[in-house]
Image 1 (cartoon, rainbow, N blue to C red):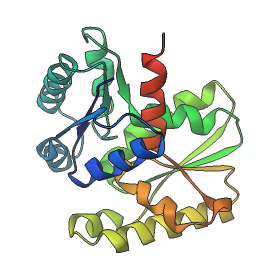
Image 2 (image 1 turned 30 degrees about the horizontal axis):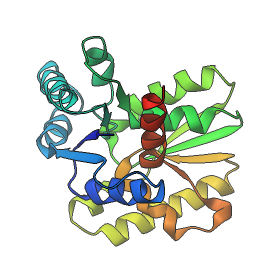
Image 3 (image 1 turned 120 degrees about the vertical axis):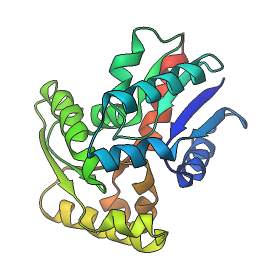
Length: 214
């Protein structure tokens, strides 16, 4: 089993490796490529451009030639999966799409938290589409000032802010809180079991394993 992950933040490598261990994936199952330049370009352009989409698709196809399944772990770049899937040699999975399907499956009130503004629109689209199949009520929230902390390398403060926003969302009546970006996953460890959010690394890796099952 070889699962290739395209990341846009170095810190997500450890996040996915940790979740892979928790899911008992064989050691060495994950292969990581980090393309921070793609997210930086999208932030500068305030969203995806045709050139960023082309570069992302090229990176995904290259990874697919040496893997059994490919995970795109950046929610800002998520829409590129639609463009590349038809010509892909292996399954291509958006981790935020897997998250949206899991979060909305049972209906209820789902609040998806985002840390960076460029992911708001793609997250809203993917969660709204998933909610149509279950009748879930979906709200997308931006955690204000969180991304500045992440960019500054203040990861503990970043995760604390995400955890606080998760608590607020549950207190506001959410049935499920979903952390839309992989970098947010560590906040789950700061919360009680009653307020645990769903995270995209776990949802994405489970979807990858399901895609590989005969």
